[in-house]
Length: 359
Image (cartoon, one colour):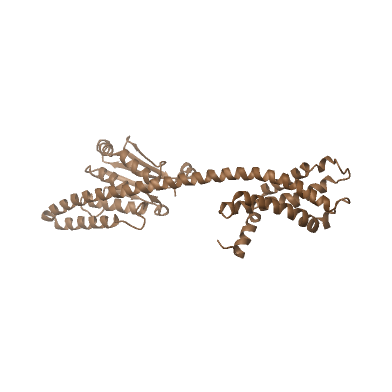
């Protein structure tokens, strides 16, 4: 990356723009620690030293610059522009040089004054001793930061691997869906062929619903994952296709709030589930996406409910128990992660509940 003026300004100013009281506390601690480590509070050489003024000097000439420059070093290392040893060593060197020969004499001395005995040799002694103490503290910080960075990189690699596994599972699901769709196609085409002899208009409507469904199931720009709107549309077409007159999804009631239409969802879950349930004649089902409850909003989860509306417990429970729940749960978790759930409550009427982390 070729350095530019805006890039350099952003690099230098970002630590200051994100400055908080914690940075100020660290600057005060560094200044006080450096003052103490250099022996000034013990007054072992100059009893007339003003401790408060020395503390202010150390905080402003060493504490504040070091916290700022370490922030710059963090960004250089995070972006891979400098090795950590060179970046943090440079931060300490620049802090000591600027603090001793610029910040203190040019910016602070006119306002705070200086000790009468302070001379050039005192500057050199302060620079030498401060460099050692500040370098020691900064190396401890750099080691801790390096451990955090390694942990973050490891977690990022694990997340990337998990994403790759989900993408592989999604691809396998698409292959599975490709095998399921021809079965549905041939089954419905046989039904349409039979209806052409008895009710040509019904056959035409059923064929139209089948074509619309297959068109909706065609691969799209991100075929690895679907949306609630796409899956609800597919569910409505499936219900029409399996319905009595192929005009309305009369055995399936759909409720999808507008705010949830674009939520990602797993393909090859709702259609096999509904196809199994609607295969039981006369049963009525309601599919609805629920606004998150307070508990779900806190945990960042969304929920779908597929509940039986009738005609009776026996027929709907028999239909629900015929669903390959474990297989569908595996499909759901493969695309939406291991925290996705698919549960069945049989009494008083069957109710399927799907939950998954919101994106």
